[in-house]
Length: 259
Image 1 (tube, helix red, strand yellow):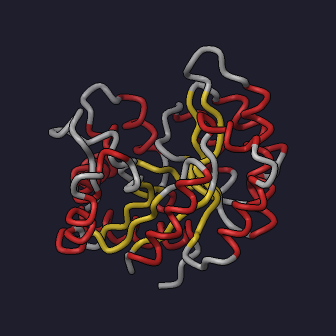
Image 2: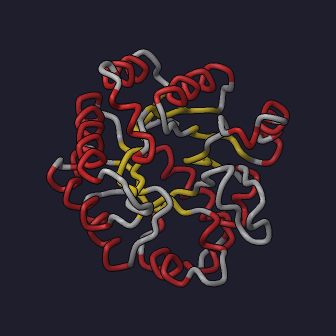
């Protein structure tokens, strides 16, 4: 059993009291690789620090659509580029995208910075980690316009329909599957997992968020991914061993990490 958590946020405040103890315990629980995902300029810097501190950690740099005020800083793109270029364990640009869930958001600004960060990924030959909530059409439109197919990456915490999944598959994207799959009422994502080839699935926690059943509403961490693996195996009617092996290999293909 080798687990690659492709999407976690161990710099989150939820881990302040026991971060070091928890992270150092993960290898004993089968977690052999983690990508710590950035959401702000500061967390991009922290992601770099973690890649140096923990030998099994990789990182991303990027600004989340809910934090795009960071992008108002005149040298924001230069900072992201410098962090990515100077650190070989930075494996993607993310978490970037669109989030229309809340009222009074600036959609045009989100779209502008999503496209800009995709262009940075293209320039640096790095994949992207896409966040998309309540913004299905605009996300796909911008990704098509920016030729995301040439960039590659993963749709984190995929939450749209099976029909829309086809568009991402046609672009060659991976699907980040996490704890939501284990929820009893998660009919749509179960259909997506049944439809999408296992070769396009990676596992993720979004830690400290989205804990699987039976830990729903509690703090999540990478050691809980076996519950997600079991759910995938049940839906795909394959062995748990196969899911572990394929998602491990898929994660390396996604982030272009040599094994």
